[in-house]
Length: 139
Ligand code: RTP
Ligand code: MG
Image (cartoon, rainbow, N blue to C red; front, side, top):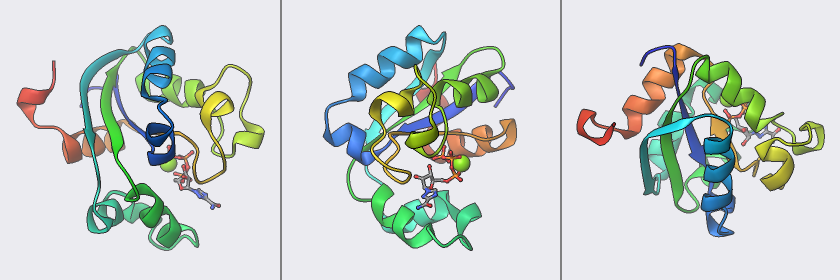
């Protein structure tokens, strides 16, 4: 994926609480264009694969259970400097440290149930987008 793309998921708790619209509004008002979008549910196996980089972290098992606990909304987003700007828009991993105006400040409930995922590099944005979307699902 080009450097002007990033990948995000609206996480299970935010989907369950009807925040798809609110979060997508913040994303679009933040200057991002939705290139691809789908509601789907990860199996534990697929969530484990998606988060494989965190396999050795103490929270990995809980994270995999949480991310497969209900439907998520996956998106590819486009904007100049997408990866960095999107991480600014979502705010800190721990909502207690998230700045005013960030998505996590508004919607995150805890360090785990923190409403949204954002890719951490151009390389991972490409890998993560490819994990969910075929070529004919991107516009
Ligand atoms: P993300 O990948 O979801 O955008 O979040 P991030 O970069 O801000 O945080 P990361 O370190 O990549 O962690 C991935 C996700 O794991 C959960 N987590 N739980 N219990 C904990 O201490 C803990 N730490 C992280 C969160 O859902 C975090 O977003
Ligand atoms: Mg991360």
